[in-house]
Length: 571
Ligand code: DGT
Ligand code: CA
Ligand code: CA
Ligand code: ZN
Image 1 (cartoon, rainbow, N blue to C red):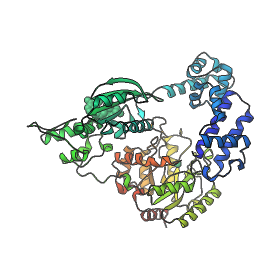
Image 2: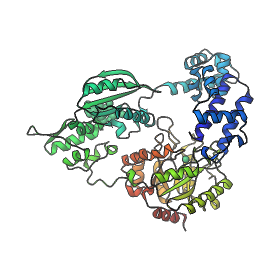
Image 3: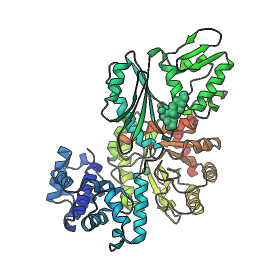
Image 4: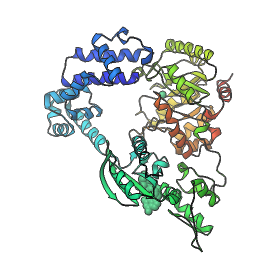
């Protein structure tokens, strides 16, 4: 249980009360309590008595304590029974907050997607004061966007489903080995379906267990070599399981990892050498011999190739690369240069984040909370940032085995101004600049904002350079080449944001950035403990862009990194 979960719970109660049409006084008590927690710099564990915070009264204190102890509360459970279930997903529709939705519910009897559509189409919504024709159009468009399944599902949607399936597969004793394959194993940004390869000598038993997995909604086919099911969730997702005897596992895994283009090139290469590749192994052209392998590495080596990690198996070019350089690997990562704490909108305190980083064996991290412009995230002004710097300084003196950089994720304002003056920035250990506002500006305006940041000698890195959310938001328009070249010229680090929703810059442009001489940092932008683990996905995305170890600044030693940062400032 962390602070964010409590805050979210209180806000949910407020929203439900609002939907129900309760008086504003009651609603705002919960909002105020949530804000009080958000404003406080401590984590949940560090607050002895929540009732002592201004903004939290007796009633809300009791609710908070009940939630911390039981993970649920009587208040919300009761409200959840009173408010129609179909209203809740509608809260996510752009332009419909609790207040507006409450009126649609109270005045027009809207209780779910269908009734909302109907009320939009028959003119009832437009006739409601404060709504009008324009807002009806917007609502209908937003409904279409939210309820139409995209043809390909974003990575962030399928990763938890994959993890869940893997956890189940581990419990089936007849499964001797298994792996995800297909586009997800190659870390494509979006996927059509999931593919798993399973080694077993008892395919009937395994097939039986697969179709009875909890999340399975529909069985498309069930054989002894292949089982296809549809698993439910926000969207339906099809999953192919291939069942194969253990000796053919590696070649089957390679085959169904793809990509198709990679496989075509592999088959061409094998043919040149007098072989034929199939799921079952490598076959001699002029005899009955079939070679099988214990690892994919052996398989590649048999054809005189180095091990090609799944992420690079894409265009087919990878098969003919003369010498594959040492690509960045999770084991190379020595630190994380972008994370948030309870001082802004993170769930854990500075100390807690540092301890977690130590568990990961990191040599260094940067604490980079939001800056004052980002008020919704409780961004830090100069005064609070100075306080934070003091806190971190003391920490470093006490525990010298990990270096904690005093950083900031500073907003680049809509007019291009930076949120802090140079004079203030120059004493920070690590300055990130990023855009969180006015995404609809022209490419020219956006580029001029980025340029201001890049040209500031105290800005060390640009975070999530395009602002995209895979499958959800395109991001603001940037001129990639110009951005990369200016980053190189000014020695500014380009981030690969490892959050699976972002992967920003994308691997394609990272590859270009590396070839133009850019320095890259792979960071999680963690807002809680769990998100620190996104480093794994980030490194996979970097591999996909053929990013070498030395291009990634957080594979360097802390001394090397500090030298680089010092040089950049010009001292
Ligand atoms: P996706 O599902 O569109 O996101 O991308 P993949 O690569 O996962 O494609 P999928 O699921 O159709 O097939 C998995 C891999 O199996 C694919 O990358 C290449 C390999 N493969 C081998 N033989 C065939 C074949 O006959 N058809 C297809 N579609 N794939 C094949
Ligand atoms: Ca697939
Ligand atoms: Ca498939
Ligand atoms: Zn951030």
